[in-house]
Image (tube, rainbow, N blue to C red; front, top):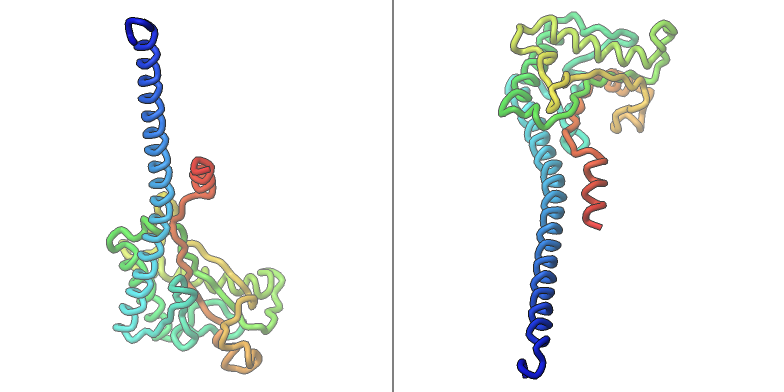
Length: 238
């Protein structure tokens, strides 16, 4: 048959070559899709690992403080360290760290443990920002110069922050810590009376509830891939 049709061998060679090209194209496509899937999985794993480190970090801080007879609690799925009113009690309308010896000693111990735990095993690499959050009770603070309760709550956070960095020795000051992108790790914020503790909602006007809401929370946010990174991976997967 080859002798009768001298073009048949050439045609079969072409078909074989096309088949090889097709197989190689399929293999390349599969490999590309596998790489894109790995990129997606890597982004998800990065978030998962950061969340696990954060939870471990907060539980360790809580346990270390408990050993020093300082009772704090964890909230919002192990993302917030709550300092209760019996540990650090702000007087109504005041933002300074209380002058009694126990309050000042406790404030320094919290700062010291925060620094040591974050620095341990380079956990700061997984963090984006640690917020020192100030809160107030619902009683209006009549001082327009500092924006009423908003300023009062922020000044409480600033007072704790400054107290750590003025009273703790170098090498233990939270201001020395950086985040994963080597920017300052800590920040301060104030929420006035807008975020009351849940256990005060039934009786918000009681003396006990008002005292509980004059407080400091410490919120830990983690490093995450950017939205642009996720959108880029998602577009490739499509």
